[in-house]
Length: 136
Image: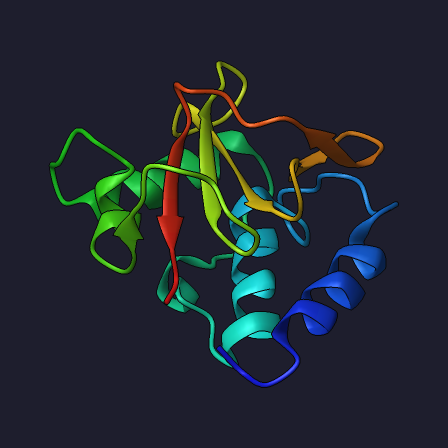
């Protein structure tokens, strides 16, 4: 983590607060990668960032990246360590029928996690069924 990472994460979250979900510029993968840059100085999924125009394009891209695998979360497992308890700065995945991979990605910012929604960020309490990773 870079010095002042908590302030940098706060500033990043504020900059994204009112930016709606958009496949081309503000998908959940873009969002968590930007949070990673704010906290660590590098994007942990830079190779997974591809500007899609829609869900179908994103789904095709991730199917190729998964190389025949069936678990899209394995792409994150290869880059970060799973943890049991959500903590500030952790990456979080929640089952979501509306997303191309079946999951929405977010970042734990306090007791709540921030996810990109149709009108901007949505702050939601983590659930026991969520998957959580630490970048450090």
